[in-house]
Image (cartoon, rainbow, N blue to C red; front, side, top):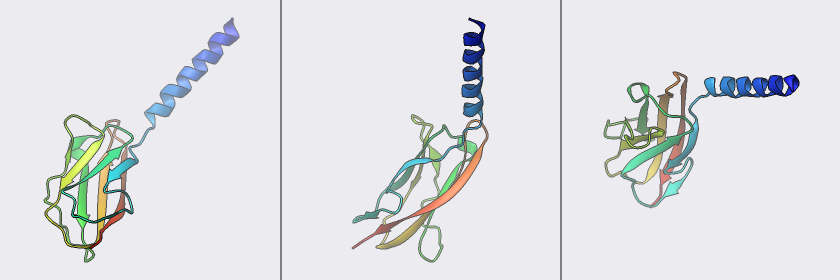
Length: 120
């Protein structure tokens, strides 16, 4: 019986430890990572694997000349703390780069980027 308790205790500790070292990574995005769309999206939306800290999370959309083209209103969705959003004006056909930097509620920071393309 003591071995079972010890084994169960180890499993519980491992579960707590692995959760404590979690980082927020992209789960999925709209437009899709590397995706091609026919019309200009109104927003870029990125869902992450962890809840985000709104004050320390950002997203920018850049054109092919590295000029920021989003509306400068990055925000974490109030109903879904894993969702980071930025609004877009109407964009022309071309390649765009999404640059993100987030801090999860457990204070771990991650950053990255991906591209999408608007095709005529």
